[in-house]
Length: 324
Image (tube, rainbow, N blue to C red; front, side, top):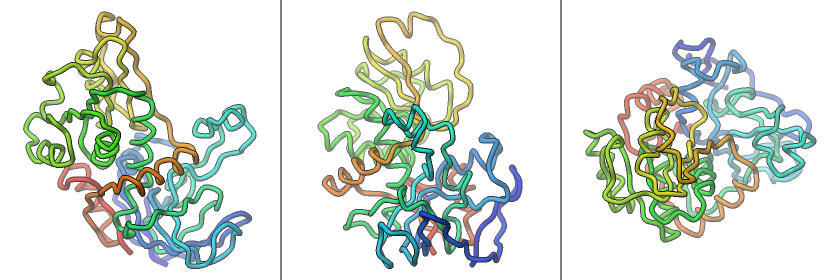
């Protein structure tokens, strides 16, 4: 099979012919049809997440057809494979419904070879049936951009006035969920990014503007998807009393110091780590009922490095997806 392989951090991916992976106990064999490209992949390539299996096949938003093994899925059935690829099921986090925090967790496209390849294997317990109504290309971003955006939104509680910082793959999906739930959305981008601001308004944001400036109203909660630590104090300054700032990324630059007055009045800062299978089932049900739209830019497998470079440079709206 063909796969795009990372040998070392800060080096480009290379195309390799390698043997098809053999499923182990409890795993399914998969024929990959699409795989979303995530900013987490960039953090791995850049060495900011510094303990990947190397050499590594990236990719943790896998849409695939089951070709064999396992017991939960029939051959030919379409499944999605997310970032969380395995947990021990026995630690205090798993036993308390917080498997996303499992100390021994293994992650797709980081500890386990992922979907930048024609074939893959995955633990069948961590695969999801995908909703009808989405072609493979459109379904891929639901598996991380959608799932992590959903968990980030849930940690914001019932906030009515919602700020979204960084209008990329996750934000363009969670904006639609928020509007479906009757929330008001304010989108924050780079000051000169008129295309992203127009995209946000198209998806239901009532205002879009400079991430470092004030919105027209105070926020009840802010969701930060851009990996820029300076956005945390900026969001705190425009969040109302009792509001929450939720950081939705796996990596962020250092947060600069800020006066305690910006946090006072029972404001809070939270982070999101990974996802649970319950998150996945809940979100995919919402996606099916709400008819969420995913905006995608398609790349063939051999151009996976171009997809990463274009993501870094912000050359597309929505999400990049590798198609096979």
